[in-house]
Length: 162
Image (tube, rainbow, N blue to C red; front, side, top):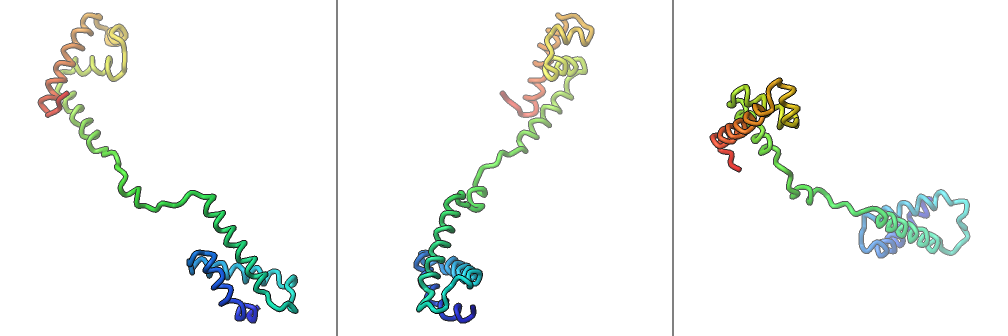
């Protein structure tokens, strides 16, 4: 095997470099794989043959074809470049809005906070909120109106505009 490698390494490498369009690293890998296959098939090779180059060239060409097919079958890797420039949503702004709304809600009276909690946050109808709080429907309607108005003013004081 070492005699085979010494005799055919250089001509096979030159042949494979042409097959791989000058990619020396890939060509070296192909030559190495070709030599491994020659070693595995040593009992099938004819030592009386004038040259083993045709057999080695055929094996190398098939390896290159298989490698190309394998590369074409998978999507090309693009690296991290596109991911680095991809815009990422800034969650800090949403967090700041939550803090501001929370602070504005704290500025409301307990009755206004309670009515907004029942109608808006828990998504209850006026009738359901009246039943849950044990107050008349008309009182729920007026409290919602004044609570939303007070919340709008509290938000404007904190710099939030519609």
